[in-house]
Length: 368
Image (cartoon, rainbow, N blue to C red; front, side):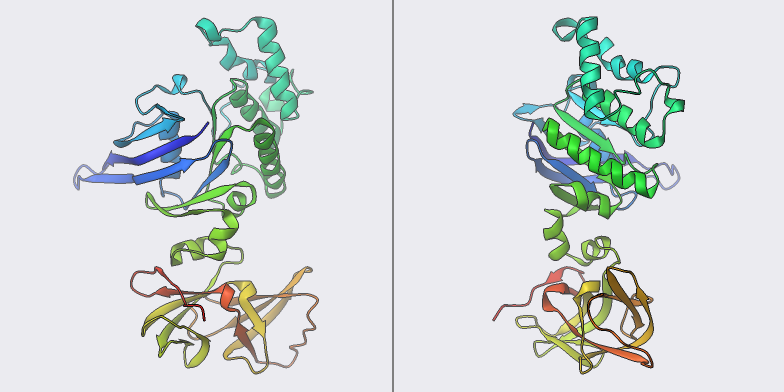
């Protein structure tokens, strides 16, 4: 099911009665979610991603704009008539019911032509339980399950209605790191097997990038960038997106462009053809540093961290906006910095981004 949001805006009245005014939670959100894809809504707390999800499912009313499921305008349709499955952050399972009863509950409320026989309901419940791999836990109560198992029950309960759209609101935030990794892989597997259009809300960029077909990066209710995860990582539209995506985070320097050359401090680091003279921010991904004893960028060496698969060199530079600079060097590179107090780099152009200091928008170097 294709989902389309057209100029969707959500405004809440201010809670501060003395100040008054309004809070714009989502501002002119326009995006088409392709049929059968998994889309990640990504951004920091308060950026409007959960509000957007709740407007898609109907729990929140749009202040303005329209929402379409396929060709049908569902903007004014009630949640129970939209055909959505919603999984909350806190699972919201009924503690006095067994797993089977929790999964069956949405089916027992169906009416009219959608109403199922008891045998049909049980068959469908076991089908989705098998899909999420909890079919051997059907007689247990939620208190007898691990966090990951409870999350699977919540997903099964959302899927049992055979929804047109599956909505997941930070479903992994209550799980430990290892279980989070396992569960997000399961969510991706389930989505692919069912082919249900899915919207996944998270503030964790690693989660969003690892399982999403496309990500929507948001800030203060406004879309910053939309694209495939790797494309957004490789080509951030602005400084916010560049800083939000990536672990370790991007290294940011104060710099300037002069005579179509990029400078960090007094060091000329790269050509900047087509960019006029101005003050800029320079973002360099951790993997964008190439060790060179004669390199243009000189940094004060702090220490070297051996991570197994790669080596992290920690250094500082007066022009850096980060407390430290982290550069990632593959471990098969012969590296001996013992006795060194400084380290020099060349910068890889494909991993170095230039941003206007005033607008923080990306500036693009002309190709030769």
